[in-house]
View 1 (cartoon, rainbow, N blue to C red):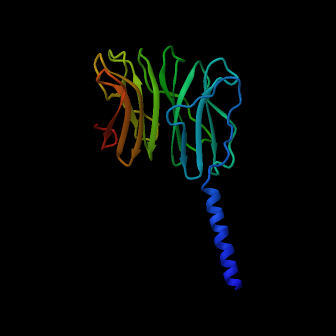
View 2 (view 1 turned 45 degrees about the vertical axis):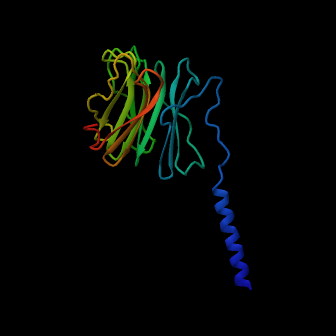
View 3 (view 1 turned 30 degrees about the horizontal axis):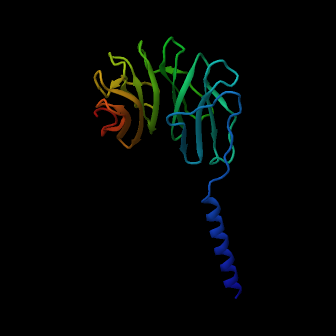
Length: 235
């Protein structure tokens, strides 16, 4: 009888625990300022119990700046908010993590027009390297999204260069964890009637997947897909 009693108590406790963890917990407020705090693209990244979040707002500044915070215990507690970029307007950050390496990209007009910039942390967000400029042209480069797997880091964004005022999908990659980057690659050529709005990217092994929203036929915006089977060499 005692064994049956303990068994019933154990089963009840087990199912109560499972039920508790199956529910959504109370939301936790990360920002508190009189202006809007915004996130776009991939704004959260997870590796094991390490969680990384990025966003942009004007806290303490006239212009938008990029902020970051992290948790090393599965979201039970969080670090202080940390500034990633603070010159001119910095906005629309994107984040990815692979092991201990955290990768952040964003758009900024600090050099005269909007370009894509990048910064990485080799130690799970404790310290950060220098800011690297990833695009350099007189047109608008915006809406970056970043993805990583091991030493491979891939970036996708929308660009108005190459006589394409409606925007095209561009990508570039790093095969050494973000230390150096390859050339910009244009993935879409839509002509004068088509335009691209946003794009997103993810990686699985050597295969890179990109989805984007575009008005190609001139009627309405639809979702399109491209993939590379060889780590971004061909599409």
